Image 1 (tube, rainbow, N blue to C red):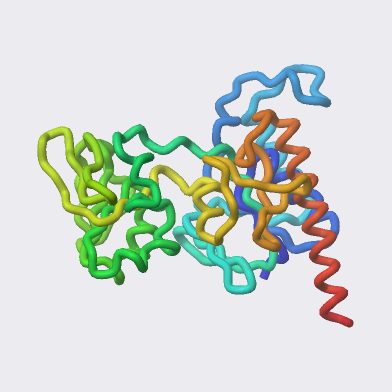
Image 2: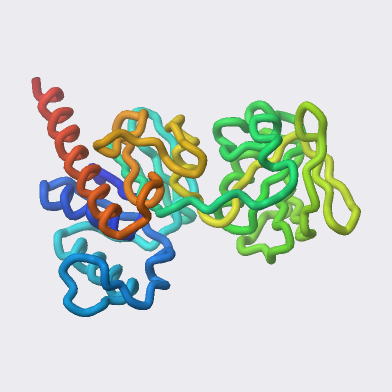
Length: 291
C-alpha cells in the first residue's frame, strides 16, 4: 500500500511526489491526460531553461524524473474518493488506499451553462452521488455527463433511486452505460421546478421528470473529489491553508485547483509545500504509533 497517493501528474503533482519519494515514502501518482499544459507550444518564463520548452516536453521530463526516484505512475482516471480512516481512491480499473492524498488535477472546469443549474444547487442539483444519493431513494434521478465519471456517479445511484437517466447534453456517450440506465443525448434547454428540481426540459420540447440532477461532466476535478469527503471548496477551487492542507486531515490540494496564479511556478511551489507537510505528518504519525 502506498503512503501517499497523488491525483494528477502535472507540475504540482510531480513536485509533491519528488519530495515524498526522496523522503522514503511509497508514492503513487494517478494521472489521466496531460491537461492544458500539454497544449503550450513554448514556455519561456519558467526558471532554468535558456531556450523555450514545450509543455509536452516539460511534462515528460517531470514524469521521467519522478520515475527515476521510484515513484509509481499509473495512467488511470480518478472517478471517486472516499474516506474510512484512510483515503480510498477509485479509478475505472481499481481502488487504491493510502493514509495521505494530494489532489493536483488542475483547474476544475466551470459547470455547464444550463439555465437553472446554479439556481437549483442544493435544491436537487448535486455534485456528489455518495454524499447526497440517500436523499433520492426510490425517486427518479438524472446524471449529467457522458464519460467514466458519469458512469461512476450513476452506478452509486442505481441501487438507491427508482431510475437513473444519463443526460449527455448533445454529446456522444463516451462510456458503455448498462441497460439499467437510460441514456438521453438531446440538448438540455433548462431545469424546471419550484422550491426544488422537478425535471429537465430539452430543446426538442420533450421533458424528463427527475427529483435530482447529479453533475458529472468530463473527468472528476479536484473540487468534485473534495466534496465527496467533506473538504471545503470555494466555487471551483479547493480551500487550503498555507501548507496546502484541506480541512480533512491527511488530504492536501496543490496547483491550479486551489485558484490564484495559474502558473507553473506556483504549481511547483504548491506541490513542494504539500509534499513537505505530508512528510512531516507521516513521520509524526509513525512516531506516535511507536510510542
